[in-house]
Length: 204
Image 1: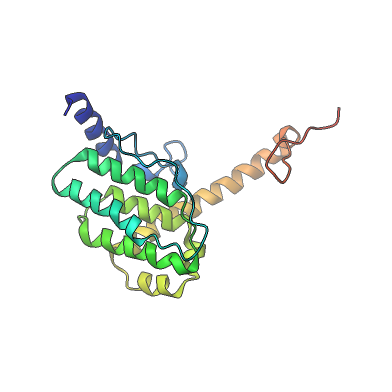
Image 2: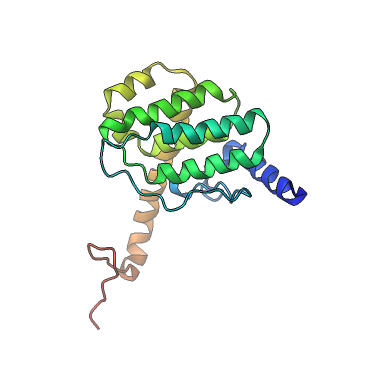
């Protein structure tokens, strides 16, 4: 493998293996899940277009575990490219994942496998990705009794989600305060949007 690629991958993982990876540098608050960046894998085997699951009967356990197992394999044999590829593809898959009540179990299977097969270390990239996802979707997940029973068992997963949740709530407080601060002076400059999200022209 090209030395430049190895250095690139090593640099990416060094960055991702810090707790600060999930935190915005300017605000020190939890990053939204969609803004997490796992770099561009050197191995050109990323997924093509990903479609959201539109039916609760679409089971995704095997898809999730495929990415997680690839990551664990890469971690075991120190193949950074495989780990990056798995993180990149799993992140894209979760971005399009609709959390139907019947599909919460798919996510739980992914979490359980991850915490059983990844090392107990600070800022483990795959664990961080999943707990960030859970923190931003905690309202929907907390309404599922199976997930709450799983969460009530405690352990590293519950601790990691709680840490992310605290940062998420701080991020929301920051956003609200920032909006209130700017609404007085910038309210007249804000362009209204219609139902489709398009800018509405103001009358001249």
